[in-house]
Image (cartoon, rainbow, N blue to C red; front, side):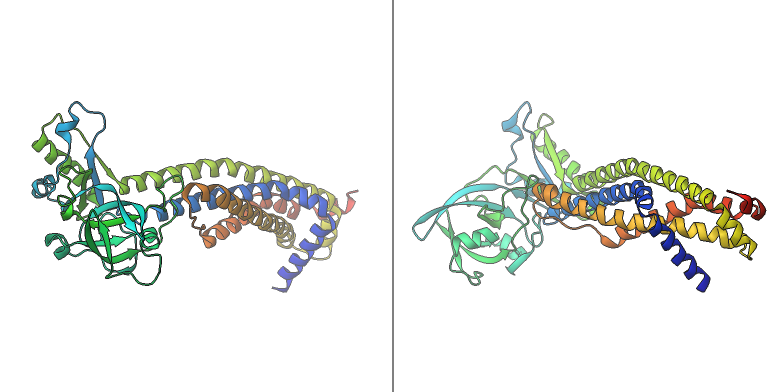
Length: 402
């Protein structure tokens, strides 16, 4: 242990006595490690941020709607009662209900406000945004056609500006009063991938769609019993709709699970490709370290001969030079880690924040572990040969070396 500590102290002394050369030698490694860390950190943060953005929406549900471009749009239009008609034909679905989005107005303190009215089912439906207060719709709310509503955070601010709990209070929609049973938490800013968080959204049970004056709906939410069968229930719902409306009616099934899977694959491929390119910098940095260590062996040939003459073993010489290589790589890796994390934070908050609104930081522990592992690995791989070469030098030839 004492001998290893001496090797460390001596390695630091050698590097410090050749500060400029050591810094230039580490430059390739600094850029390599920094590039790898930046790539991994930005990719991980982007992946986590997009998943967080999609988290309020169910990945167990498929949304089926008519295609925009089709031969008979009127025939393909989905009716409110279609949900009940196709539900028995979609065996793997736990729920099938109609979804419609209505833009209406209401008056608040003599001021007209524009509202977006959404529909949803009982329990945790397609919209899984956490609640700040209150409860979700129950089966009784849906079957009994109760006039209840869940407000978005912005709707609470606009409709009840006096603040305080709003559960139990009423909001007027199309001349009918609805009892507020819950308020959603403030949503993430959608950025370029989502809608506006400034919408005054009020969600009501889907069973009230006919009462709101709508026969046709935007689409059907098909909730799968098993998350792995989301795409399957979407296809089953389309097949059931075509039996009702005919094969000329064309429909699309969209689900967030497929979107999430595509995002995961895309980020994985991009991270691997960019990481491979950044790894080339590590290779270049490693070659530079091997080169400078070979130069160091040549410069210190006489020193090696003296050490061997006074009893130093081959192992001692090899460990000494390998320690210097590892020290060179670890210091370079630490600087590269700081550089990479700094660049990653700038990219995350300057670019990703504009795309997804709210960002989720990358996982620190794996990133630091990778940086240390890369640095130590480069030091071992490219430091072994110079160390072994130094250990096998003949002490007599070393002492004669000028």
